[in-house]
Amino acid sequence: MSEIVNQDKLPSAVRSVFIPFIQQLQDINGINLVSVFVYGSATSENYNPKHSDINSCVVLQQVDLPSLKNNLKVIKQAKSKKIIAPLFLTEDHIQTSLDVFPIEFLDMKENHILLFGKDLLSGIDIKGEHIRLFCEQQLKGKLIRIRQAYVEIGLKKGGLEALLKESLNALIPVFRNIIRLKGQTPPTNKQEILQATADLFSLEASVMLDIYNDDSNDEKIANRSAETYLDKYIRQVQRLAKFVDAL
Image (cartoon, rainbow, N blue to C red; front, side):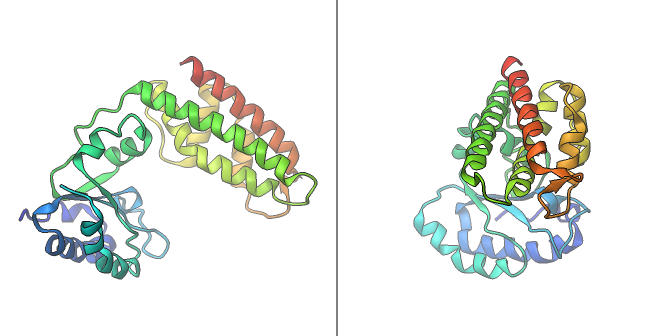
């Protein structure tokens, strides 16, 4: 059985709870266990044990119902330590899914710490066209959804402010990768991502920043009606979708 590696790269709060978790995974899965890594906020010193979850991936030689069932108890116990249920994958699943989940795997590649076994992420190749197609699909899908949600809300009072915030936050990872498609290194700070996207594609940065920074629940954004911002936001996303289609 391979040793646990890179423990020193983990924030101490993550290390104290996750290393025992890996040891349990080793005992349960034996030679079926190929690798274990954490990704996301758990790889950073900005990790906050009170508010942040620990995201991880467990790669097995074979992922079937019996092997998943073997891990149910330890995963249930880990939940109380903010270790959410890992992604259970196989090496083949990773290699054959890079085209349909390019952003997810690229984010994991850039923000992961291998703790056990083979590093299956460092060498993966994410094609730029796959990223472009994914970004275009997400932008156009969000446009469809936000229009649909607006007519569902109809004449009811309330809901537009939350709709805008939810839609924008869901698109921030897409914006980050659109910046990448333009040949630039994307920021990690969300407000900087919004500003950089606006600068690159001649958008009105204040529209997205006002929505992102709004912390009220009064159906207003920057003291103006949420509906006014909805119109501006839709125009921004439409414009960006056209740019991405032409990349």
